Image (tube, rainbow, N blue to C red; front, side, top):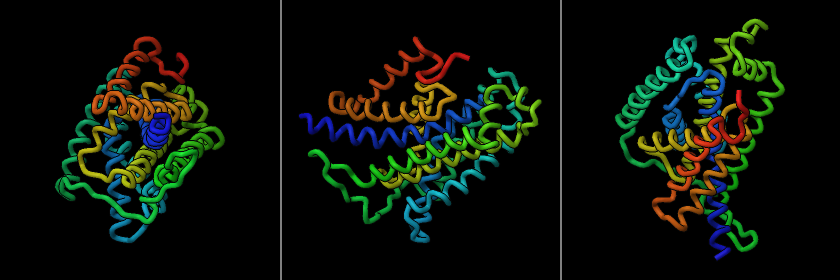
Length: 291
């Protein structure tokens, strides 16, 4: 029985790393701009499609296409900010959250329906030489896809952490998240900072989608599920801690995996109960300080 638990734990860590990577983008946008970008799951879906078409048309492995996907969706994110979300940034917080959520909901309808029209509702998958490979460790099988996805997701999170801590642009994003008005007094270009932050968040979501493609494929309906998972993880962690969001993603993935043993299709109830408990007793999140 212990063997089964360990095998499920491996799967949970792998899926949780994808949850964490996707949620970091959502948490970054909300933490910096207080914009609720609920179309983030559609970004994950489109990132998976981008990786699929790079593989299908040009033979580029989904893992190798990650830099291309990141660059493309960084530009997409910056464009979305400039054209869609920029007018909301000067509104009061409550109005900003509400309006941005409505705008993002409209964006979901547009993106998901256009995707269905363009590529139908069929599930798209890729086949690489390493997808069926695994290796044994302490009596359990570790799939190569899961291990590679975990490593790449962790590297992206570490890279984002170093960017925010060590670079001028990263420090500008952090300063703007604390107080946009104060940051502007020190010479920070707030509009450019918001645009870069949205671009980074969108790129991370798209990279998560490229990794999702390897494990489960993609179709136009997966976006809402990934939005909900990202929201749950981001709220559990709280804003302002990139590593904390990733850890909460791992935690959530493990909870779901263990829950599948005892509760089958109702496994998500465990995560929802913990989510509600955090909202009641620690609404700022597990890794965030009161502001």
